[in-house]
Image (cartoon, rainbow over all chains, first blue to last red; front, side, top):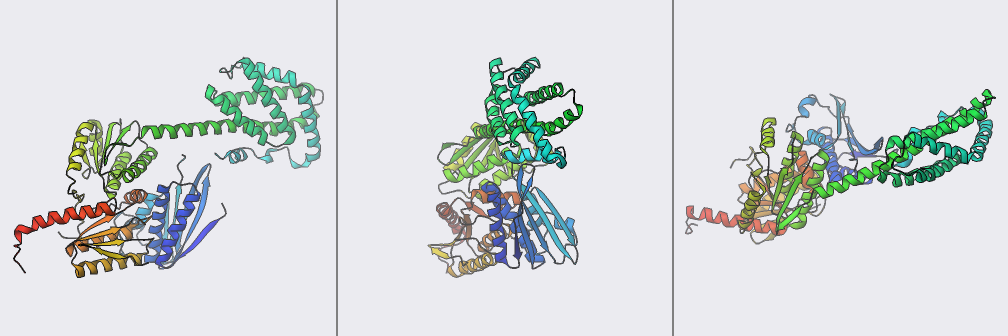
Length: 135
Length: 311
Length: 132
């Protein structure tokens, strides 16, 4: 699937835009409205994470396919300060900012695949995917 | 679902004999097709005989086998001739639709296509046995095409089978998750059978929609018919209870067997927020009580305040 | 996007019309809490029927509204959470524990009526009516 959507995240309106675009893409991929909501919520969390810690970054949305499974891929990247203690950041309920600590671990719960790479001083990339159930 | 993709993945044109002999291989293919047309009656009969001898398609009569064999044979030759597989694909889909309900299995379909491939190859051996060099070239153009045909038919069959299985699963799921309204504002959800994550999700989505549609205040989820529950399903049940509360409905869980109750406690699922009653009858009575208390409405604010606010 | 806040009797009703940014949510929280104090109302209803997603920030804001309003003497009830939204919330681990939630505005009004009545009954014996 060549078509991917790149969205700049630099203000809180961008978070709203990103999750709306994500929901629309999930609808195209054939996800149920319940799953579309879940995907939109996960996007909201990682987009806000960019805003809170890096101020600016990018979210790339695309359709993916694995055999006959269809899914969506969401990549959030920033050149922010990076996460010094990834293990801690992924603990549910842990937050250094004003969230409820559901941000990254919350997004992980919602998705099928979740990968976090971060280098202090260079930035963070979150790659997550959700696959459509076979039915 | 995606018929085209499945077949293209499995059969690559690059399996062909090499690009150098396109012109002559086209000629050979023509010769091959002519041979198969000429000997249609005999080869077709031979094939049908071997199908019967191998005890394939036992669910079908000999006449039926011969009729299908004729159709497959003609489609086969046409696919060889034209190099296009759409007609064969469509035919194998229709064939599968006809024979799957009669209990024909995948190995039988694969078996008959491979038999046809062998019958035809043998006839080529016989025809060209005096000219090994030509035989080899004929086989070079026959084999990849024959393999691709076998693939197309087999994949068509499997896809049709999967489609039917999916349809049936869907139907079973809907049958097995009835959300019942027993009286105004009271829903009952009896769960029977095995709950996998997929079914659990579907159950929850159905229940939440039903709560909204029926303006339900109380839901009784009866799990008497659930044999076992792992931590995943138990946590899902907890989530269902929490999500129902967000829609303003109180959930009562009934029929947790002693075994399940023990498992849940052992694996440490937090059921403290869940109202449970021994059996369905008791659950409905409790629900009636809750509904009766509702004028004035009872506060659903059962949980405690998070630590950061002091009471 | 400003969220309109209506006053109906003893209650304030904030009815969210469309997707809100974090700033909109924070603004709603401040506006509601300021009005609770000014109008000395007894109940707050936040209608979220129009929200098709609720993430951790939105849920935290709603919780804060409920807790702050309580400290200022008003009960809060969240109404209109959509089924899909509720399911996504609990999967995220956001359960709005300790905050009242009901199906819709009508239920919300009935809920607050019940609560404020209860409260008045509780409070009366301790506080003689001749006071003030």
